[in-house]
Image 1: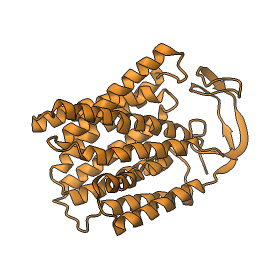
Image 2: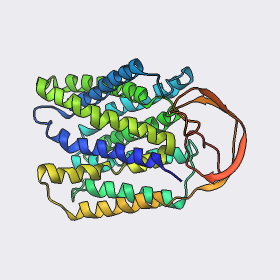
Image 3: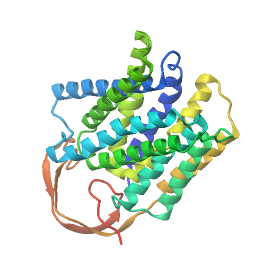
Length: 338
């Protein structure tokens, strides 16, 4: 079975992970909330320009957002772009870095749990064990050899932020058949505005023009294009599997930090790499196949009919069909499992 979704998810992780050590070099003289706002704003602005340019030069090959998508998208933006930054900033003010870094790994866990138990994505032992190995690798990377909580309120707020991002991921999967650039532009624009407003409100300090411009450009690639690939992965893999592959991003950032900033190669880094490699391998070994029924479905998304047709989009109806083949919980396979 071809797996374009896996490539999209790992590419999203690569872009996002690579942006972290580069962003580290921009932190001088810029507060983290302001920098986060600029990164997201660069994502939203750059993708909006790209979306407008693409519409102007040729017929769109992706389906635009429809009215039925709005509740899901507004929910995703509300949880991921508004509530999550508020919880995160509130938690970081009273939580030591050692605990905060570990707690942020909960996003992948919560994404998978919601996908499996609320949105009814299928799971087998390979996927669950692989998810556990990847998350354990991320936790090992974040481990600083000590753990300070600074009270319970801060960690609970960070966990709430992770839950909000997990809800965001699962709701975004519901609209992933639509144009990923349009989706990512809207999410980046809102998240950028919220984070930047909060950052300026808390610190009152704006960065220099060159530093701000660099953050906007980095945000377009590391956050914007990464989110486009993330949405494409959601379309093909579902939320839990996409979240698992994307959780490898910290390892990418750690490796690039070694190259850029001459940081040492540590035993936890090697162990984390092994755990994440095992987790990805377990996911790639998944073989989910059984007789299943497709209910009638009318929707619009990018597709092609055969080798003689270019990818295009139009509203079409899938008739009822029962068959057997390997599949993921993609936009055509959201059926239940006994």
